[in-house]
Image (cartoon, rainbow, N blue to C red):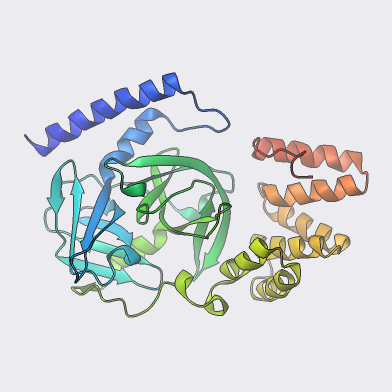
Length: 342
């Protein structure tokens, strides 16, 4: 049976299954992309298999980003003794590797890869609250699955934008794709924070594009350094340093980190938001109000800043501002329940 025939049969079967699932279990609370978009991204997402020196088997995900190139996370293939990817029952083995260990992005290069590359888009133009979906083999599934959400934050990393979204992913999803609703690849699902209220981060496609053009091919998978997010907290970017303070509600620690963050990035949305958040919880309401207003003056889609402006307006019984910020919030994220968030 030819590879082309397998792909067509698979897509037809998946289309029937997705239509049946949506018919039987309608999805509410958020939008989902066109079925054709979901199906069209499937052929470009692969399962990555690795074996270590003890013969243990591990899996992750990968995305075909160009002819004969598949990107995955370096932590998926690091220190492995063997790598191959599978799609539609066909196995492919790479013959070279391009690695950016610190950014946790590794590109597998093949000689004859009969798989369709994705279309990539510029993350600099991607706005907050943009609808996105993930595509990966999370949970070691036999077929790629999707989760849905929106972009919640973007953080500067060496001149690029790391993306935080509400589209969740699980073990095995590392190296999967984060797509917009046009089916364009925005990033690679890479890491999450611990706990039930996890933050989900994806590395941007611009790093991949630079690696394809300028990266050097290697043949070893031994990692010479850790990914930036897997280093001691004091060495991590500010957007990672604030996570433990947020989880522990340690507002004194947050204000120290956020002040340093603002010094480093005085006009960044997230540095100012987190300093505003720390001030809000330290009862420095005037300072918090100014910082949140600065953020929304720069970014009209920063939902959390509107939420805290609403809280401040309510505490001061300013009904006009309450109505204005409530309208902003409802337009951006209808899933936020203001009563629960009081």
